[in-house]
Length: 339
Image (cartoon, rainbow, N blue to C red; front, side):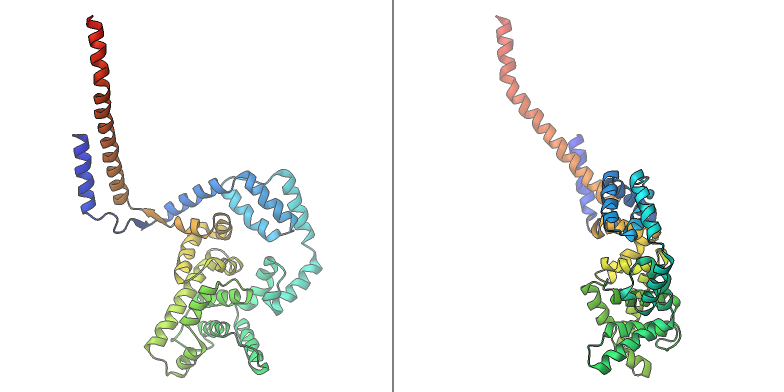
């Protein structure tokens, strides 16, 4: 009866198509629990010591500052000796004159910025203003007149940034959200953190010819739809920037292969906040994005019922075989005892 009942329930569950949509979007609390569980398994004290040791050897203070908050999230701290080395490295990098020189380099061209800290302090504030977009267009103009190849993607993103600040009018007014996302994408292009596949998608979504048509008022519905899609991608990137920082947002673009990845990354950033870059570096892209979905209760219950029926069938088969094999032995023992 238990076997028949399990089979009946399992077959009934299968008729409801539980595997048509086996994975569902996880809630924010479920994503947080999944991320924390994965971090506990991955970022052990031994691995943290190894990672910090390698960063200290390379004098990579940026990576250390990325790892420490993620470790603190799960209650792991660096060893005392390493903590002292980190303090010493931080003090050595805090030279006033060194910062002034690095700041000037970053303001001139973010591609030559020597550290993420200087990029955040000196490069990004300028890039967020229309001056940054105009500077990108200036570089493109210089390349055009010198016969060099013009970076059309950067031109497009700079134009979208200007449109978002109201310097140009493309769609009747956009928002600061689009401006931040377009700036992050343009900086990612400049710093080479955009993946080839994402770069190709951006090139398909918006191009200078389309923007010229929209500015002149000759654009059609397809042009407006493509620009809206580009602005949606910029909006997802802007959410990442808002949850983390412009610097982290630009560096996180190396994990984005398309618009869907940008949306997934935005969801992760809503949960992980300023620790998003560290989480992505420790867990990797695939493992991090897997925390965004969960198996539906319906599919899980169906699998459990089928497994239960299979286990009961094996148990019944084992009992029947055992009885068949032991029966001759039992008869022999009974005959022996009768003598």
